Image (tube, rainbow, N blue to C red; front, side, top):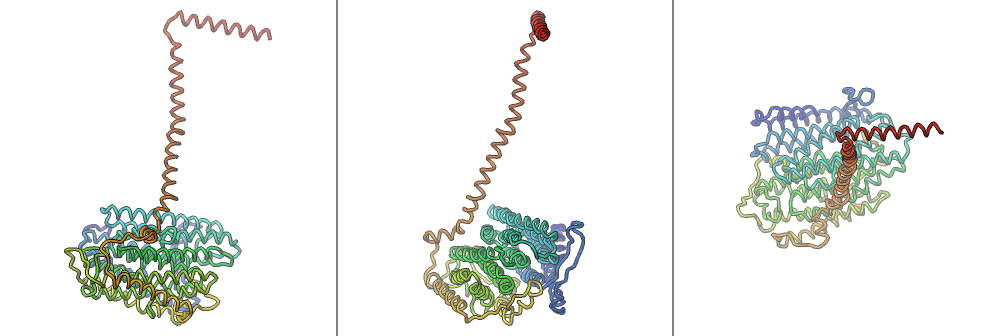
Length: 613
């Protein structure tokens, strides 16, 4: 699984322009080959008993006596591998059409292959060292893809921002690994035994790992990079948001469940609070974006927040959290690639105020996009209905019901901003820019959309009904005291449906029925708050960047006035003293004779004084 896309990246990068004609085909073939291997691994696991579905494969000594590099094939890792390679392959195929006229298409597919290989290493490694190598590989690949059009200053800045913000989270993960090694003497998942460890130690490790997860999954307070990451080509956005990078944090929390869910640990509550805060923040941001890709980016923040909230409740919430991760992989890829299809037909325009009335011109794109939209808002019997509402129900019936009701509010806001996006894009009067000629995308782009939309319809029900995913994951993540079940007719479920319907209705009155303004209205303080991404950049600038600048200036002052001042002052003292002392050398014999006379007199007087004493 890992070697095929890694080989594809190596051939395309080292082969250079000689591979331009067929490089994109090689990239697709390597990703599809990896998907085939993942399917074979799934079939093999299904043929084993539940207790045998955890196979560790040792490869070599990474650090002799400390870490053995190996792979872990279990239901959790194979499930992620299927998502990464399956959805990733569809994004590769879509990119053939989307990047058809880009002169650097071969390099683009090399980076896509590198991204897939790094993410597979992250989820298949059997220890934290291998996970961390894949973690950093994903960070490198995201930097290369977000800044793919590096000649655009905005893309170059966005890539650097994503790279730097993620290093903050990576620092937390790295320190957490140090504490794990110091405390337990191992970094291998199967050898970790937290029995006897203090709650304080476990909570500290959990919080450090959570910091790493916040960086990769764009959760508060490390969420600011995700919206700027839209500067990369649209397939990059789909890959990052649907199948790879942002799911890594959820995987880390679930894989490290032993540090989050012992009795008395505060780390699980921190995960729940971060998830609830982020799902609301992302939804609010999505309401104020006229850029279709940035609106979807806010949506990703929100949906990953739901997954974090579900993962905070341990085995009872894992099935819904991971289930929502899988369904989100389909409908979010569908939405992002649908947005790319719209841009493809609208001369790369991203402003929804310049869309409108596109349904008759782009029927396949519109229908598949609307299916993804219905799935994400939790329309009954579509994928998101089973998984997201399952998370909400679990949270409402937990020890922290207020977080569940905040998730209900987030669902209503999701219904509003996603309906706003659909109404502004596909319905109403055309507001196209002069020279725009919207048209449907080629089949190489629409076929992946159709496949993703089918998954957006059926996957959630298949995973949740009859507790299919729960029983599949239990050998890898543990079983709950009572198997979780989804009941749509409970109070949280019915209230959620009502709140979502209210959000859709409000969006219809504001954007479906009314005339959409060509320029954004001034808005009130809340609108400004959302448009500026909840002042996340301003907060980071105030708390971290400005103090960092002051510390840098202080360091420069200390270096100039302290270190250099000491060295230069000593040199000046020696130079000045020698300048004064050399005046004693006059060159006149009488002066030297007089000096000898005075010196002899002083010496004689000193000897006489000593003799008398």
